[in-house]
Length: 236
Length: 106
Image (cartoon, helix red, strand yellow):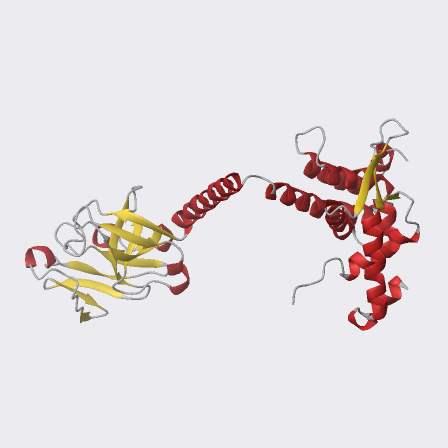
């Protein structure tokens, strides 16, 4: 039986053969002896199931053969390859973490003074806050409504809370809020009066710690949770 | 205790298949059929045996166009001696191998 004939008879066999051939030969004309040996016997198999099993075992053989060949390389080459691999994997893992798990950001405005000064850097949790939720007093990073700027503000009101500013202080659900994170300097912390707002579902009432300059939920209302990017874990 | 090489049930299966007719060149596929070993088990064993000069390999010239040459296997004198020895040792101590393997090698 000719290889082409044996391979022609079903799509499964054709795919199994080409996967094995690809693994054995790659872009070369001829692969390693043992890979070629398994490949040459492929035509002997009958039926799809046997062909697939044969090809799967062939992949394992190819892997073993490659490993044996790698062991014959000079030590320095093996170490160098391993080092390059480790660096590449590390870079890739770093990129994934930076994109989806943790990243760093930098403060560009004075709206969170004096907790966060201009130029401060911070670490943002991009994932875990989605499981644990955010709490009052957390600092979150989000896209400022109507812009594409990432900013940080403090969570004052959760859905269902009523927030109001009166007598220079924030009142949460009617009671004055104790805000230890604010600057003792009233030039920063004095909160101008604002109308009582009840936070709708899936939104957050966010304020900057610098109550005089901060542009926040007092201007653009409670922020949609989808605008949230992360929760600030620490400042450095 | 270090493991004695070439005593795995799979290797013993292969030894007994190869020892059936020690002088005849064998195909990988036929050995796989005879021993019921998958290609992924059989070929690594063949590789190891060949590397240790217990197995001779050769390429059978292709007799049809479009068909690649097939790889052939035969035990060397050392290989045959070792295989006989390992199979005898197993026969002397049958308990070390599972009954299912014994049934297949019988």
